[in-house]
Image (cartoon, rainbow over the protein chains, first blue to last red):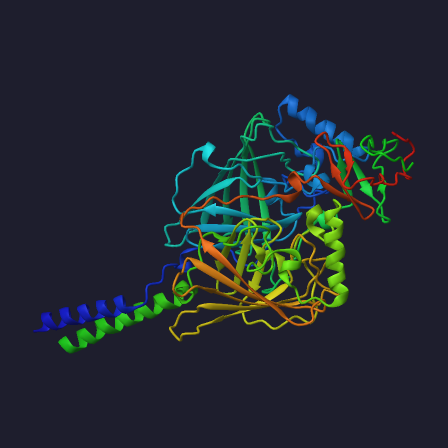
Length: 288
Length: 282
């Protein structure tokens, strides 16, 4: 009788549990990546750089091939005399694209759902990445429209075996260009065959610090280039989300291969000494 | 003893269930399933009221002053200009135009925020559903500041309507590419009811009402989107600036030719004033 009573109790308890409504998303299994993330400035000077642990510009020591090192140096030289160099994101308001999207120009938000992790970044324009975590295989390159952000597949890892994921490993392929790595115009290869690998995880000592260990594999490089980006969580539970709209505010205008300024009066200005005006050959009238 | 053992097992099961329930902060079964890609169902120029033709056909209840802005816009466009459409240089369209849904939308629902991700990439929105009040001050944006509330109309235990109000705009904004104008004071209030078709859940509606000083009365339209059945749809990345041939200099719209040179957009359009350049190329 005792045994039968226990069996009944267990059966009843099991039924109780099964009556709970099905909950497809157990967010307790995932790390809390909510909120607004802002890059941690390590004080290396200059503008926001691809490798935040090193100095700006040539101090990045980018492992570029000689051909692409020359492109970088030409970019820096052009910028020194007022041009935009190889940084198309500035001159044309183009998205920086991966991996520069993760440089932390403005705020970032990460939304974790079972099949997709979304990364939303305000830079030039509201940018969003989708990191597919639904177990899909890589599509054939010809079946994917290349994009500035690329096509990302991720996998959640429970590194401690504690029953909770703590690491998101991501690989991104299938890019379009042009893409540079930061505003000095560190170039990626014109073939756009970059592969970007990331390990995204919260700091174990401080869960309000986020790490993105990012490795770029690219034919402009002599070796894979790994950089370590860190972000801090804004403690305001209702942060302000700025709206970036580069085309609406940019004073730069690219005509042909030249970049000009638009002055406060709306008229064109040169960006460097002795810059010729735009060619007006298609106009019937000559204003000046 | 058998009775005590049974009680213990049942208590343990109940405790386990409650613990598991507490750990699940996001009960997605309470929210409608709007996952995936949604495309607009109307054809032709994406416009505010998809049930009517674009331009004058929208029969927008504009004040006389803003009706004349529309007429001037249409006339300028007929002559080759861009009229009152600010987006030809890739300035963000803002609300309500975002919801014309040019190239595909995704609704990402979380308890505190519903994100509307538009593939026309400067169009994405956040709709805050965390119960917040309106802020005292806005940092005006093209998309505005949206507060939403989930409604369970049928009392079924599952939300089925998202009611949204949006304020805090910047401009200029137009309803569509005819340049149908919103008031320059940017005090628009946009109200929406977003819900799935009860009979055909493959359709989503956005019943949108614009309250604006360029209008003689609130203007309501219903947008309809269809769900893409592919569970792994292709997400296009639409970058307006990438191949845009339109430029604006000193409030005049010009074009860039295939060889990258400036061209007039209208017949006999004078070239831009190049007074700040030392050299004259032509």
